[in-house]
Length: 399
Image 1 (cartoon, rainbow, N blue to C red):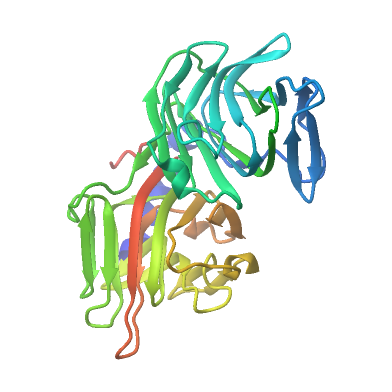
Image 2 (spheres, rainbow, N blue to C red):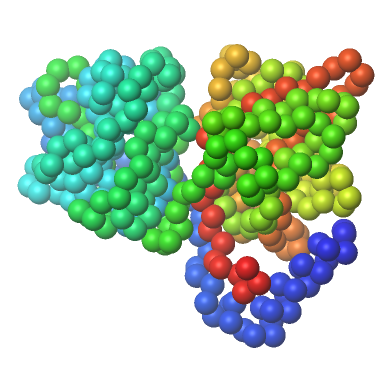
């Protein structure tokens, strides 16, 4: 371990033990909660006569004989949170209610809308029983979403700030004070033909100040980042490109360190081995620490967890990642590091889960994008965009 790293960890311990303030003011540790067990509808209740069944580990929703509205409603209420669910759309209009309330046989409040045969409904926010459409998704969004595959839906609420993302693409970003808390619910719209599948439903409860923010914007590589190594990095309009130059390791490294966080980005792979470092540190130009791996040429590597220059492989990726991997497409990646709990998600699916056993490794560290070294004549070529972070760290006294 480097002297800088050891000094940093010692500083944490001294401040925590010497003052006692950290233990007193640190909130209860946060973590992801699964809201669906894959077997039954425990934790949820049905409003209306819609058909809600569990098939093959997913909730299937469909209109009932009366063709009226129906909802599957959470038992619990939530205020500030990051909510994730994956859905597969077959037909009709549906959505996810959030910060909502029940009024008789109806749900009232915010709704993240879904209808993939419409160019203006999916990804926008509709206030059920109120103002109607209040935040619209960008035009042409549905053309970027698969009609016959699982799609990741994310809703982040922090105070009056609401953001939504579909497969990592931001659809809305607005402020509104109509509701600060409420129920979650999946909707079957009235009328004919609604049928939608839901799975991988999870929530991370937040404070009002824990908000989702861009990790990179624009085309300035010197704004919050620095380059390590002799490889080529460029940026334009939020698109980061990394290419091999000398054939060695290259890193684009954040100026800040992060401890507990959720990072999202989209990437497109053209060739070579790459990844994203986190809770990491540099010794000269050599990176140490955790890495979310990317290399579709090696079975089981993309979506796996690696410890660079330390412990090696920590968690192998799910084999589903390699199935139908399209190197021409953009893929989404999520890295969640909260206390000892490390989770990786690739295209919305959890691919690796690791429990850290070394308390010295649960500490702040660098985040970095990697270009792996390659044999002569080979190249690494990567593109990244839509980088954002949900930083759960409380403000530190030295920042």
